[in-house]
Image (cartoon, rainbow, N blue to C red):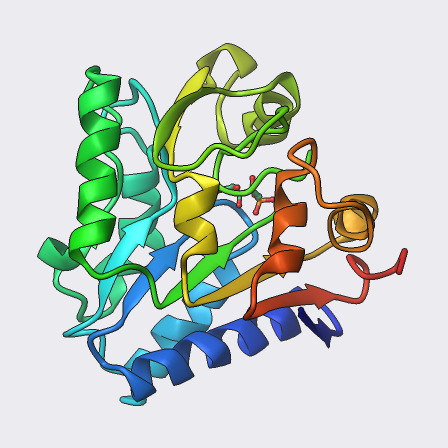
Length: 241
Ligand code: F6R
């Protein structure tokens, strides 16, 4: 595990965007595993800035997102497909046909999860997976459990996640209770994993996840065992180390 310490959110975002940019430059047809949430927004802004300066070409990049809420209309501004379009895809020259997000409106959970695993497999796996860290240690929507889930699956969001995500919705009742998420196996099989974490509110879970025991009760802890895992965090998030 490598830790890159940045002064603040902007510094963290630039460092992370540099890692992703180098991945695209070295392998223009790479497969990026992408995340939503507050943590990667700055990273996406930096990637857009690099694209606008003519430093990056997304035309051959393929992407596969970690997760999607179940039951939200794709035009809902809280769906993760909407998030990806407004925070990245609509601002760079990525071919939308090469982007993938689980289909939250497909109510056939078994079928959708099998389809998504096949999408990942058919792309030859993920070259670089970007992650954020849930306040309870979740990665994707792999919530604390007594085992590590493997492939794409449907999850019931925990109360901690509903509380953390309600800031994006008008009211708490609007937060969907279910999501489709890539499994821990899919994430661990990515060639490189990069996680962005910022703020004092994440300091305790950073310590637990990366300096505590590897346990499914803290899903991110398994990243300690990944051969190419980089944590890019600001000083506040690293303050308890
Ligand atoms: C998002 C995702 C989640 C978030 C995590 C942190 O696609 O899979 O695991 O990365 O909940 O969210 P933020 O960045 O909003 O603190």
